[in-house]
Length: 125
Image (tube, rainbow, N blue to C red; front, side, top):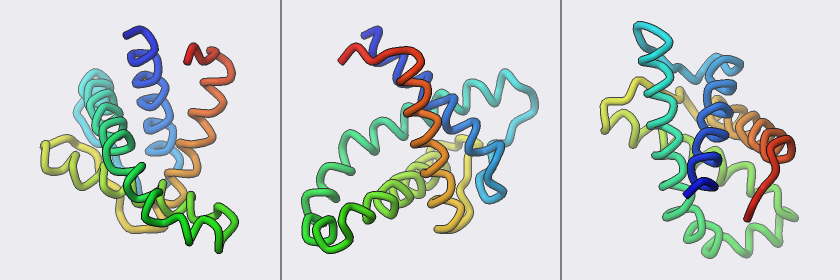
């Protein structure tokens, strides 16, 4: 349980950094408390999307992994972030990713920040 909470908080921090840096990713809210709850909820949605859908997409895209030497991972991560944006809008969360390029840059930033935070905090799994 502790690992799940830590990973969710790391994802939340990474999503917040991406929303801060990338112009096409918006995290709206009245105050920082509302934004904090929103980003944690979005991190939960992001975790569910990555847990349920990403393995299936990766399985069906094995030929593309071989053809692109793994670079298709960036596109898949962008699509997962874009799907998270869509699901967040359906759940009335104040998070939106505007277009594929914003999703691609945001996914890259989220990956880098998550990697750095996991490296700094340690990974128990």
